[in-house]
Length: 270
Image (tube, rainbow, N blue to C red; front, side, top):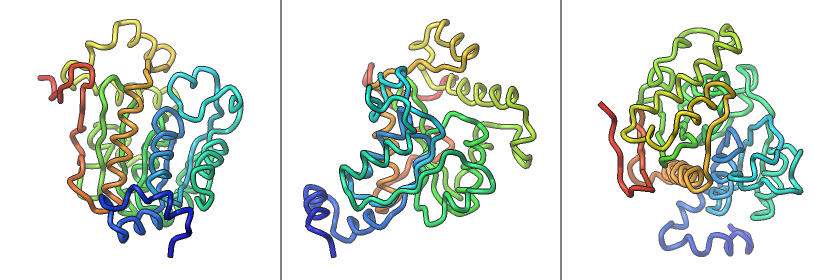
C-alpha cells in the first residue's frame, strides 16, 4: 500500500513501530496551532515520523528575532507566512503530505480547522486562540497537547476525561464568550497563565527580575533554543502516543516536567 518513497521514509521506524501502527500515523491528521519555536519543530518531527496530514495555524510571518529558536526561520524566509514556509518544508520531507493552512482561529472556523483531526498541538501565545481551541477540541473529543517555551521541558495532555484547560488555569472565561474580554484583559489572562508556572519547583530561579519585567511590560518571553526544542520533542512524543495508542499520557492537570540543566524532575513548589 505504501509508495517506495514512503517505505524508505519510515524504514527505520519499523521494528519499534509495527506496520499497522505506521499506517495509523500515515492516515492521522494533526492540527499544529502556532508555528513558532514549538510548533515548527513538532510539525517536522511528526512529518519525519510518517504523518501525512496537517492543519497548520499561525497568523505570523518570520522575523529576525525568530532566528534563535524557530526551525524554519532563515534569512530567506524572513517576511514569509509561517504557514506557507512550514508547508514547503514538510513537503520537502514527504511530497505526499497534505496541509490546510489557517491564519486565524475563531468559533466560526473551528469545525473546518478540526474536522478529521486526531490530535491538536497547542503552541500559540494568544489567550483567545487558546480558549477557543481548547473548547473546540474538548467538544469534539480530540486530545490537546500543551507546552510552553520555558527553561524546563514541559508537556501535558487534555482529554475529555481530564479537567479542562480553563479549569486548570482557573480562568474567569469559563462559560463566557472569550471575545467579551477586552484585548487588555486577554493580555492579563495570558500573563496570569504564564505566571502560574511559578509553582513548579525551581523554575523562577532561571529568570531574573528583568526577564519577568520584560514579559509583563512588553509581552516578550525569554527563550533559548535547547530548552524550547526539548519541550517540542516532549509534545511531539505525546502526540505520537495518542496516534498509536502507545504508553501512558502526561495527563492534565499536572505538567510532565524535566529540568535538563540540573538533570532532575521537579515537583510543585509549596
